[in-house]
Amino acid sequence: MRRGRLGLGPDWHVDGELAARYAAGTAAESEAWSLEKHVEACGACAAAVSSAVRAGPETGPLLASIRAAVLERAVQEPRASVGSAAYTGGPEAHGSAASPAYADNGTGPAIGTSTGAGTSTTPLTGAGTTGVPPRLSRAARVVWAAGPALRGAWLVALVVVALGAVALSYGAGLGASVRPLLLVTAPVLPLAGVALSYGLHADPLYEIATSTPSGGLRLLLTRAAAVLAVSVPALTLAGAVLPVAAGGPGAAAWLLPGLALTLAALALGSFVGGRRGAAAVGAAWLALVVAPAATGGPAGAALMAGASPYFAGPAVQSGWAAGAVACALLLAARRRSFDHLETP
Image (tube, rainbow, N blue to C red; front, side):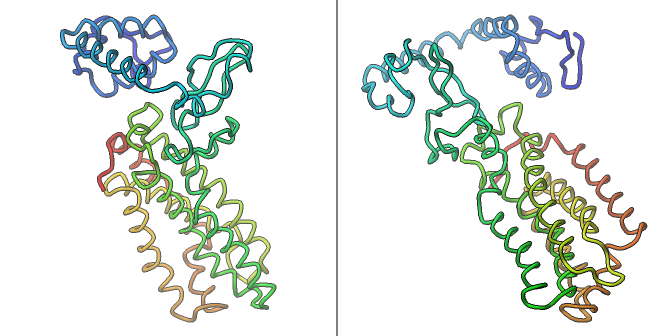
């Protein structure tokens, strides 16, 4: 069997032995994931796996009982009870009979309608169940699903910090004294967004999302990237607008520390969970950087003098870069830990 990154090569197909082990539940986790991803696009292998599963002595009665239960429920429940949620119109509205089809909402398949004119993007369940509002475009649903933190209090806090820094500097007349405050705050803001992006508290369908090939670390990194894509430009632009402090770090000096802290929170989260990891890294930053930097005073030149050693200079920035690389390597080594469900 030729293998690629996850047991999948470009010309790889499922053989009978792997299909039998998968059906029996004895295939290795990496092989099972590779198989599940492969059969999404390969009908021949999907049929082979289906045959292997059906060959099990317990599978036939189980499938028969499920089919009987589904048919019984379909007969008992009136069609009108699902018509408004699952169908966007009757056959007359589309010129052909409507049939169930899958539409991707960014986190998994949702049932819509397939007609002669195309496939509806309306999910079967409303926003109260999946968190995805109905009748959004596919691009909007992908963005909605990729950034849970971007539609909550975290985004409001980010805007308040960025605009508040500018308002204090120019509106309140504090000038360059606001820059060190933003500098020590900016690296920890993405941590809160990452903590709110993945886990039992973030996903109404967390168990289902984690069980898919696109779940786990891949989904977490996608959502972390969404947080960084919003916070990095906003905070850097706010820092660039503020008056320059003499001898102080530039507006982008927080980027490598912020990246290192984010990766550290993700790596630590592989051991203790996302929220605990982000909280621990944030507390460490507060105790080891913010508190010592503020010993000379809460703002102005004293705070800038205290904060500069953590940001300014090639040696310091190289240290943050090395820390980011080390945390990324640890995260890669611990990637399988995200395949398992979080415990409350």
